[in-house]
Length: 101
Image (cartoon, rainbow, N blue to C red; front, side, top):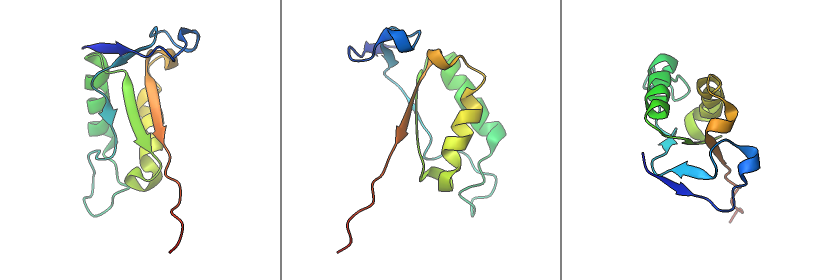
């Protein structure tokens, strides 16, 4: 895995020395148990994806509240809990409401 160094990321907060993997894992499209229910994340398959990515050097994970009806963030917490918190970057995207026309 190739990494870039984020100079604005103090190493005090992690064991990565500011290194961020060039490839990240986004969680907008996790596998589902039921295609009709976007909240029905297939946790076993999704965990395999997380484990594979982590084992191959991915240390940047991306999620947002709207993904999978709010379930993506919760799943990311579960999936990454087995790894030391200082060993990965977790990006939580925030969408602000649009002004009404």
